[in-house]
Amino acid sequence: MVINIIKSISLGVLIAALALALHFSGPWRPGAPEGDITEEQKAIEATIGFYNRVLQDFFASDGAPAMIDSFPATKLQKHMIFRDIGFLRESNLVMVYDMASMEFVDITVSEDGQSAVAITFEEWNYMYRNRSEGGIKQEPKGLGHGYRYSLVRADGAWAVDDVHAIKVQYEPDRDEFFF
Image 1 (cartoon, rainbow, N blue to C red):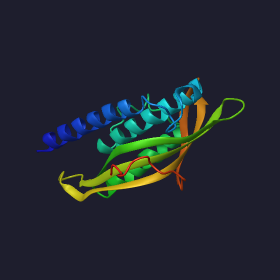
Image 2 (cartoon, rainbow, N blue to C red):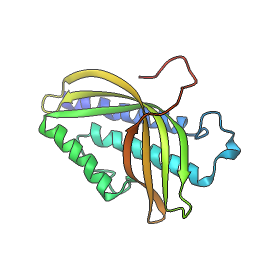
Image 3 (spheres, helix red, strand yellow):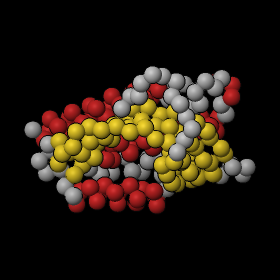
Image 4 (cartoon, rainbow, N blue to C red):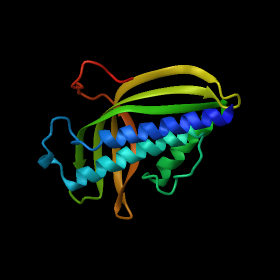
């Protein structure tokens, strides 16, 4: 039973990662011509996309640190994430995240190129399952929200240093949300 649940979650994470990879192959800002995107902005977009794919895996796997070394986050950010996973574990819960969509609203790189801020609008689905029994504790829910990512250079690559939920003036160019 537990093996089937793990296989189902792993398949779901794989499908979500493939969908995100296809989604992130377009422009970083809705409607922006391809020529307006700098290489630095593309690198930041890729970093945040990978950060969120691994983040989903950390939560769904109940904190299995298989990708901790390649996770593009500062040490403090990693500690904060695993603190949250530990809180869920103590509550006998596992949170399963699924990013439905992410649109980059703005990316700003500092003059010295050592830090950056990215603003996104994201839609997420999530549910809680019982850690010991494996059953669903809460039915899937969804949310759409803005986020502010602070990034820093670490060993020549971008790393997420902090993430905060913020209000974003963004209207998705569609009639429905994905959550």
